[in-house]
Length: 203
Image (cartoon, rainbow, N blue to C red; front, side, top):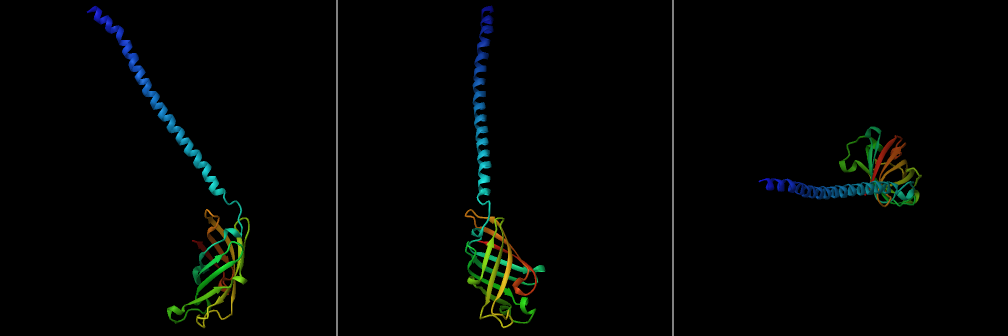
């Protein structure tokens, strides 16, 4: 019994050392996994931080090139009493290729009993007499020459054409540098002597 007990006493440390080695290996593996996970998170974080500034830094200054493509616009007098919509195409070089504007008839004649289809007036943009400019901050100016449709009601704007002048503010650029949205301010909406505002959204 004494020999057995002594043998057990001497073997016990070897078993403890074996267990210690196994636990050490496990801890080492876990440590390696944690280290790899930390490295992966750091790399992902750095790539995200580096990627975001590039997206925002693509356009540091604005120009007429940023106002380019087809835009649908909504105009309204203050308090939205007179309204209009338009579709036009700035060409990215300070001019326009096409444009159509439809305004509510009450902007020109007041409320009346005409049929609903006759409650609107259509105008077409004259590209050769229209232009715009954009400065480095994204603010700009446009002058649009609109010619009335021959199909308009006689109550629509009676002149052969009218000039609309707007201040422009560009915002929300796409990857190719074109603006998605432009805010407009007009001191003489539809040339009827009232101020107004508008928004143009590009597709």
